[in-house]
Image (cartoon, rainbow, N blue to C red; front, side, top):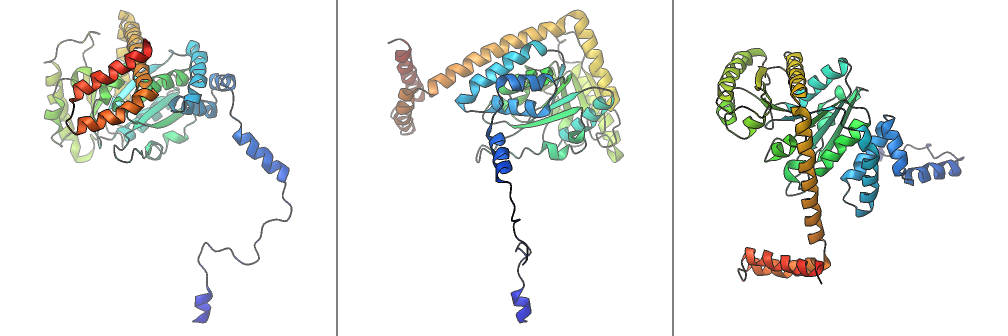
Length: 365
């Protein structure tokens, strides 16, 4: 019994094991110093253009950073990569949680890399409104694609931006294109108004649906249906094939009720199984047909131009908002005004007008 009591836990160091007597302190310090050193903007640009994934990842981290000190370096990187961008096709993929977006993207992305494409997946993970944290588990779900040397997966937290995608995602696309990725896939969080934001930065918008979950009637609504260039009924396998085909018929009928798209493209409805890979090649054929048609008519470039203008305006709005809230005077007044609004001493509209007038005084002394 006493011998059992003397046994230690599995994490306890065994007797006789000790640190080596000879330690290269110089080598250790060199490694530590190298890790502390941050590559310059020009070094990161050079790395991105040569297809270095580490350089690409570090540059994206700078873009996503909220540290004001990183903003200038990030802008320099974007400027250096811009001449080498805009040579990809951008595909947005959305669908409610549980529709199988990650499984579908892995199957679809693997199909593309096997066809000789270089695929970048920008997966936006929803942030908790309570803890503000994100799981960022997309790499875990896409086990095969993450090991593919022709694929790059970058999960990012949505934060407080509209639907989790905004300027930072738009600029990340530029870096991925400069790194040689010819197919960019953006996965939305699948909730709220994220679809609107994604639609404003992609060339093709794909809506994933499932059958047998009361989803058909919910899907036949304007808005998301009008944005979709293709609807894919996922999980069409096993006993669910019949239901998937029925859902396909219902969505096809619904699509004919909507007015024609500006591109004159008639959205297609198809079924697939991300598990068995059935229907994946047909989806790519549909997307290819879309690009061939829109490039011939000039709509492809027209849409890209409109998106550039949209994101210029969005950036202006974002910068104005940031400047307003970061003014010390406004920050000081905000706390007092907030309490007054909460206590019904002043209306929210009057409070907002007061703060805006205070901000105006700072701009025009």
